Length: 264
Image (cartoon, rainbow, N blue to C red):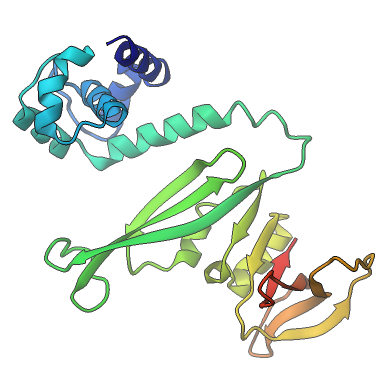
């Protein structure tokens, strides 16, 4: 009971009932229930995660002993289903922004790494008919920009599974970070835009990218280095070539495989 009150107090310090109510209002959701509000639902979910309640039914039996108002499990399930996803997304971004403010004052320090990637979840086509994916499957995709040092998401975007990663990266980039991306994000026009806007980034190049007019860069050689090649060049063919010259580093990993990365 004591630990439960501590978690509920901590949650309220981050997301007060007024903050949650405002997020619901912004989403056009009318939270008419005074006893079982969206904030109450967040408290229930928090304690469910802390105590590892197995289901709404078991949670309903234990909620009162954990410091929450009791509710029938069907009431909890109905509330969870009716609260729009947009409310929870706004609250999530509020939590992330509050945590990140503690570190943003360190602007004179070297930039942090921000890792960009996505995860696709697939189900049968009848489960999500509005999100066709491949064949008889439907899918949704979560695009995440993750702060490497804190393991905290900076931003999250959701799409259907068929949406390509590259265009979504424009919504996830941040000038205060060094963006770390795989080759799905390496469109030439996007890389040129990153360079002209002084966006720091590192991206793995596709295997078939042509390196035009390579020039070796001066660097101090090291016997322990796994760097094979260190050049500047334009990227692509005459039909589709970058306007800017980019820095390309080729290296071997610990298994002897060769990779080309584009750092700036």
